[in-house]
Image (cartoon, rainbow, N blue to C red; front, side, top):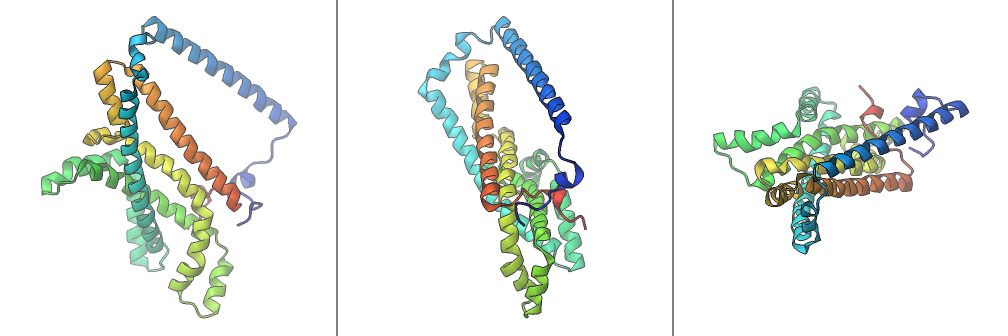
Length: 281
């Protein structure tokens, strides 16, 4: 797929004209002004209620505070990295089953994919945290947060992989089969490598969702960034300041991941593939 391939957006919408561009610019300016006014009102309210007092912010000048937050950040990175690895492997397996051509296997994989895509990751976490111990299965806090996040992401990634497979021209499959390759070899040697190259930017951007899903690690008392933030809130009685600082940290991390996906898309010359561009059949 080249960089000049018509995207779904191009097919549905015409390029904006001069009048539309002017209206968009005016709307953007008005929106930014309203946002600035809203932020000013919020800061004013914080000031009136004493949330901007030094006692709620001074502890951020201590190296121990940042070290504690960094320890939580490392915990978040560990969960996100392992969950991403598991979801990638499981996503490929589910995609292969979904596109295998074996009807019973396709149906089973489709049910699994739809289940993991439809069930909130928090519900899966509660199942691992409260449900499994009732049948004698006990996992560490790390796995009680990692496995649910990975399972929830695997359903989405399976569809992303399938979108990539569907984006590979059908002629590639026909040519491979015509020279005697089996369907399995055609998939692993011809189709899958091209599909992975196409969906790399989307896979990276999906890490944003994985990172955000780790924020509920406090449910199982796993020491991630959010859990350590809650400890700081309890210690210093500083809800607003801690949550604002942690929010900025999450925004910076997710922004970096998004920029990485955009840069990968530009370098490979491929648009970001999502479920909206997949073959619905």
